Length: 238
Ligand code: ADP
Ligand code: MG
Image (cartoon, rainbow, N blue to C red; front, side, top):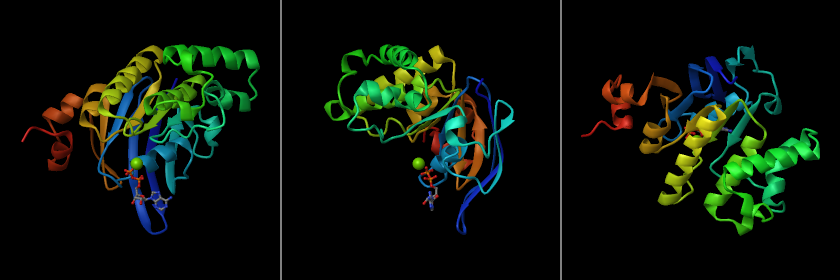
């Protein structure tokens, strides 16, 4: 569970067309990376998939079901942002459990799922702390934990590591790869970082000015870039 099918997605803000007809199939359990220059529409596309932004036209199917009018909370999607968006007044435990609690899950279920996510992410020692008492890397793990707790079919990551220093980026990247293997969930991940793209992706989608330039495995894009733009982006050695 967790396949995604986008057909002819268009999105305009006023007269500015940001997505110009996006077609994409993501298979259940795939790890798909979006790359492309700043402003090309990566975040907007994630927000359309999540339902946080309405497409101007087109279709979003999850597991074969049209969700274009389904509210975000009912799409079975969790999104992890670059800024962690944790509640400062809540403990780590309550930040992680809040979504489930709001959906009316019984306390025992919330505690069990938070406990599981917390041990997967080595957050047990921090459960009683508040976000201000954590490092940037720990906060990002809490944000990832909050996403896992809801057991989504589909994870969307928008440059989740870009606020972390180099060493933490590597650790958190490995952690996300581990999670992908153990959860067997579908993940879509936006990054500027070539190493992240090449190491995490089953499939890379190269976007430019609201359109897809090429879709392929890291090796396909590296060995057979469709054009100079893709070659420049994936970084064939000069
Ligand atoms: P990326 O994530 O690839 O850097 P975005 O999806 O954030 O790009 O933005 C794509 C374009 O859409 C940019 O030109 C941006 O200014 C514009 N844009 C994004 N969100 C809005 C909005 N809410 N209102 C108007 N323009 C927006
Ligand atoms: Mg963005």
